[in-house]
Image 1 (cartoon, rainbow, N blue to C red):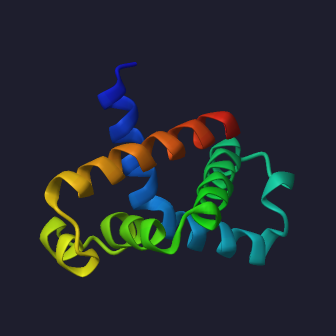
Image 2 (image 1 turned 180 degrees about the vertical axis):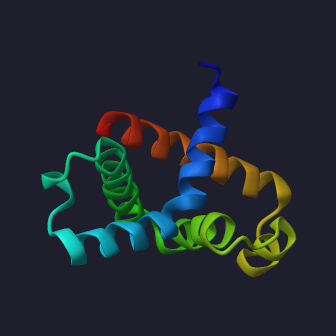
Amino acid sequence: MKDCDYREEIENDLKRYLDWCIRIESVEEIYGCVEDLEDTELNRIKRKVLAINKILNRLSEKNRKIIKEKYFYGHSRERILEDNKLSKNQFYEVIRRLLGVFEREINNSI
């Protein structure tokens, strides 16, 4: 798979993160531990959520804010640049670097 394919997959994972958290929480309220279910897709999603959480917890506050604004809240690039006082080049460099970190952690978890 090409780098751009991995990047797109990781970006899609980050965009689905909040929905995945809600889904996992709902299932666990009803059935208990997700790992006890035979739903391999749900288990794969939970491993991805745990990997994303691990990275988010290790990021600086500024980088965590950028990821949340871009992927969780869907803010425009212009708004993120303004809110975080970044140039366009700085923004893309931060995103490129962070996506690499998320990619390694998510791929190690699944």
